[in-house]
Length: 275
Ligand SMILES: NC(=O)c1ccc[n+]([C@@H]2O[C@H](COP(=O)([O-])OP(=O)(O)OC[C@H]3O[C@@H](n4cnc5c(N)ncnc54)[C@H](OP(=O)(O)O)[C@@H]3O)[C@@H](O)[C@H]2O)c1
Image (cartoon, rainbow, N blue to C red; front, side, top):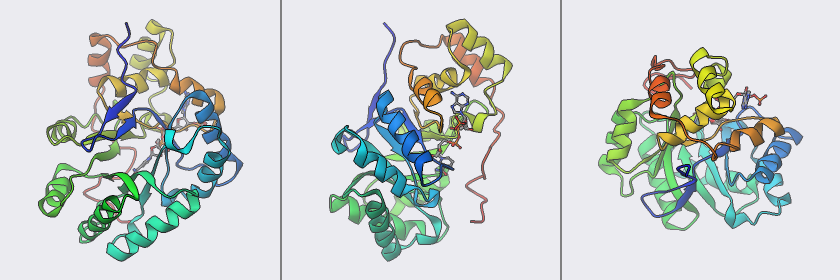
C-alpha cells in the first residue's frame, strides 16, 4: 500500500490539499484559465495565486467555469508588500476576492515579511479570519525570527508558512521550527524553477520508479509532509505533476535527495529583500 497524504489538517482543523497548482508568471488571459481548468480536470483542488501575479481575474474566470463546486476548491492568495498595514490589507483583501469573483478565501498569506508593517497586516488578517472571510491565515517567506516576532503579539498563530523549498534548499531548521509550532510548511518553487529536472541523482531515482524527475521531486515534498504547488502552464505537465500518488520513495531515495541541499536560493533571502 502506497502511503497517501492528500490533505493536511491545519491547526484550526481546516483541511488543506497537499498538492496544488502555482500560477506565478501566467498571463491574466487564456494562459491562466486553461491551466486552472486543466488542473481541476486532472483532480487538483488547490490553486495558489497572489495579488502580485496580476492574474486573479483569470483564476476567477476558471473557477466560475468549472463544474467543481466552489466549496470543494481551496483558493490561496496573498497580500502584496505595498498593501501592508491594517486598513490597506482590508482593502487589498476586498480587491482580491472581487477579482476572483468569490466571497471567501480558503487561505490568505502575507507575501513577504515587510519590516515595521507585518504586525499591523496580521491584525487585519485576524479580523478577516474572525469575520469568517478567510478559512485559514498564514505567512510566506517568514524565517523563524520573523515568526517569533509575529507570534509575540499575535492572537492567532499562522496556520501556514509558504517558503522556497526544494532539494537544493531543504530548510531543515525552518521545517523543524514550523513542526514544533504546528505551522504547516508549504513549498514554493518546488522544482527550483526547472533547475533540478536534469539533475543526475534525480534522474536515477526517476528511472528506478518509471516516473519523471518532476514527479520524484513533488513526491519528495510529500514524503517530508510539505504542501507543494508546482507551476506549469502545460496541460500534459499539469496532469503529470498530479500523478504522484501511486508510488513512494525509498528511505535511500529520500536521503539521496536530502543530500543535494546547498542552501541555494532561486529567489531572495527573506532577511534581505528590497521590494
Ligand atoms: N510566496 C512566494 O513568494 C512565491 C515565490 C515564488 C513562487 N511562488 C508560488 O510557487 C509556485 C511554483 O513556483 P515557480 O513557479 O517559481 O516554479 P516551479 O514550480 O519550481 O517550476 C516551474 C517551472 O518548471 C516547469 N515544469 C513544471 N512541471 C514540469 C514538468 N513536469 N516537466 C518539465 N518541466 C516542468 C514549468 O514550465 P511549464 O510551465 O512550461 O510547464 C516552469 O518553467 C508559483 O507558481 C507560485 O504560485 C510563491
